[in-house]
Length: 260
Length: 218
Ligand SMILES: Nc1ncnc2c1ncn2[C@@H]1O[C@H](COP(=O)(O)OP(=O)(O)OP(=O)(O)O)[C@@H](O)[C@H]1O
Ligand SMILES: [Mg+2]
Image (cartoon, rainbow over all chains, first blue to last red; front, side, top):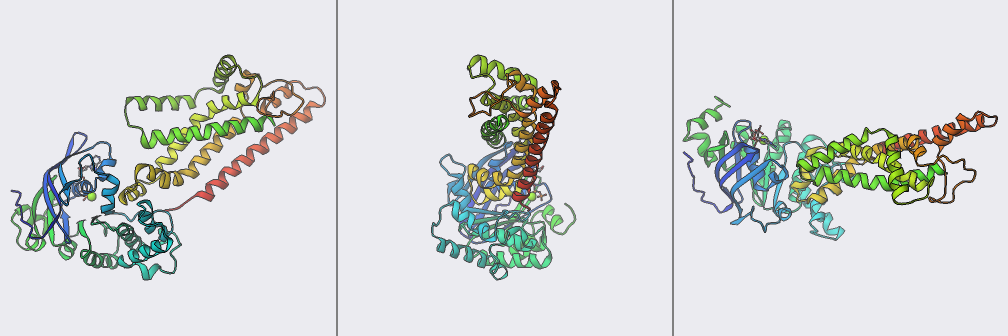
């Protein structure tokens, strides 16, 4: 049933037989998924099916939840990220994350972006840091809007700007993979369009995994799509195939809005 | 002066210990039976009548450690015992109030647990922590019962030269003076009460000022 699509591209991350429990409750069952390098992989499915849970397995954010137990293998460039000798801090520097609600730190725009490079000691030099901040903001498509007020608080920006600030913050530490959990769900259509455009540009440099409830968005921005239902992957294939010619009836029903 | 020394000692001990305990319990301690037990006990301690702390102070600091009676250091230590639970509870509440999204954001860019706490949670919780501390201190300032027990009741004429000299504190002074209504003491009592109230008002004003100064919106 788990139609294992062979990905023709290079594989950056791979999940094998991943089970996740919250206490006694199983949230994910035997998840197998490959994430192609420099592509956008979309995770879709009805609410509560475990998309966010899976996303959080990929950078071990579930470690911060006491009741959460993860088993199975998740690897990044063929290295198991759950093995004992992996430094979680370093791992999260390689796998950045953007959250559903924009969550800038209550600091200045500059400090928001500079925070990651600072704690990872990427540079001690003020000038280099300035360049990293500027580059990140440029890439996130925010620089023009905020270049004259880098010292005003990040929280003073509009929602869409805040979300792009969070993206800038994530890319400031040059991650290889960026995980995005419904990054546009708090944004209006224009801000959404901007972020989508941005995602499309970012995929040249980064591998992106995005959770979305918006079918059009998945179709627009992603190259691969995985359909989750009740903690399982029902179908995983090229986005085009999922949306035009799904194998599973449940997938078809979900994307045409007949269930969920 | 007795009040001042006593209070400084209380603050110097209760603030770091209280905040450290709260941070540990809230952010680092594993959730198990043992930490649950400690939590319940801290909550209970906050509700113990202050005179009990006075007796405890008497028993421990004077009988066991033989510190001088009537000295601000004993008063301070005793009041520290009393304010500690208040500070711990206030600090934990302040830390809990820091939105989880900020923690997630920090973890998401690869901050370690310690960095999350020191860079984000503590600064954001600071206004609440300070308010709680000052409220606890104000309560300590006005406390009489525990200090009667440790003998800070002496009729002391000189101002104390240091934390080990005999001294008395304002509320105890008021308590005693009000008891002996000979002429002359009525004015003194009133004056002492006014000083005490002024102290309290200043402290509460400070609490409000600090809270607003550090208040950060998100
Ligand atoms: N911290 C938690 N503790 C206990 N159970 C949790 C926790 N987080 C999620 N769950 C459970 O795990 C299941 C999957 O949740 P998850 O958040 O991954 O769903 P989702 O697909 O992201 O949903 P949505 O689209 O609404 O965001 C749900 O049944 C949820 O109740
Ligand atoms: Mg979710």
